Each structure stands twice: as C-alpha cells, then as structure tokens.
Length: 252
Picture 1 (cartoon, rainbow, N blue to C red):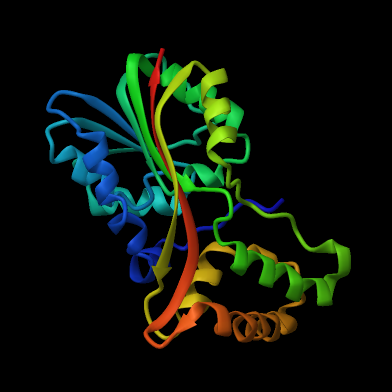
Picture 2: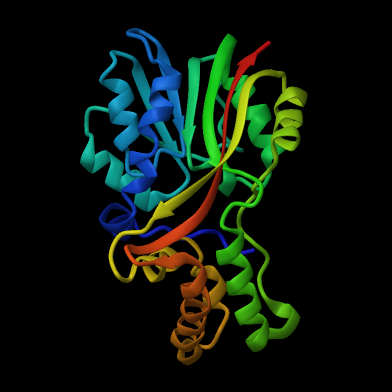
C-alpha cells in the first residue's frame, strides 16, 4: 500500500471542515490549565492551538512532514513533532490524548493503542473521533468499481481502517484502556465548492488513481464523479457519506 500523501495547502483551502467539526470534541476533552495533552494527527495545527488556549501544554504530533511544517508556521508557540502514532515512544507523559479524524489512517490499530496507552499517565484519558464502520462507503465502492474496469483485480487496497464500536473497543481494552463512552453516527458532510468531491478525492483518495497511466487518471476521475453525482450531489452541493466513531477511554 502506498503511504498517504498530504497536500497541506489543499487541506487548509478546501477541507477546513476537518478541524471545524473537531471543536465539539474539544468540549468532550475539557482541557484544564496545567494539563499536558498530546494531539495525535494534528494536521496543520488548528485544534492543537485551540486546546492550548485552555492553558494546557499541548504537543501536536503528525506523520506528515507537509502538515507539521505548515502547523509550525501557523502556530509557532505550540510544539509540533513529526512522528507516527505507532512509533511514538512517550512514557507516562500526558494527562490526556486527543485525536480528531486521524486514527483511521493508522492501519496497525493494535500498535497505536499500545503506544497511546504507554504515553498516558495512570487514569489519563483518550478522547478521539475517527471514521467508523461504513464511513465513505459510497465513495470508496464507486472508486473501486470504476478502477476495476481499468485494472481488473489490481486495484489498490484501502488506506483506511474504519472499525465498529465493539472492534475498536476490544483493541483499546487489550492495550489497557477502559472505554467509558462510544458512539457511531452518520454525519453527511458538505464539501466546499462546485468541485468539492473532486478536491476531496484528490486530497484523500488520489492514491487509487496514481496506479493508472497519467493519461487515464482524469477520465477515470470523471467517471467516478458521474457515478457519484446521483447519490452524493444535492442542490446545494456535494456531500461525503461520513460515519464517525467518537469515544472516551481511560488508562486503567
């Protein structure tokens, strides 16, 4: 599987909904002055900075050099670290872990859960939201069906992990967490601009198309958009068929 490539400029220009929807998650986190909090998958840093406004000390962590570079430019007073949720080696350093729209990019969920538990102090909390079971099912199925016409059985595997509540709860519990709250809910998400779905695909799912010869990519993308339009394009624009898993867990 090809590693996800991030375009920080496109992310900030057209996908601000990612962090705007995360504001409610900060309310669940309820950060307190003096707490030390790790923001896992911080992107370009908007939510890390908002958490820091509470008086907490925040470390923003992301595995994308482009995202971390932009975050450091955006918020020079917040610490940002280039690292992955799987390979981070913090030991009992944080009162809380926060993660918005990031953990579904971590395919080794068991290793990430172990590393997250290790990073927390005893009774520390994890407050997270990620794509849940059935997330972007319509988009992904349509892309795969289209590319199958070009590639047969050689379509790349998905680069996301969208678990159910029981599945992810079990992973966290094996790692030493107690899950206190979990919710899976539909969240159809409006995409900005008349090219909203194209921009979304180019940001989040372009790896599917990169395996095609360059001259075929635009044609295949046009076919995907044509097939998606009756399902996900409304009078007021494009929507992504998001389903989100929101949870709170505590280190036991």
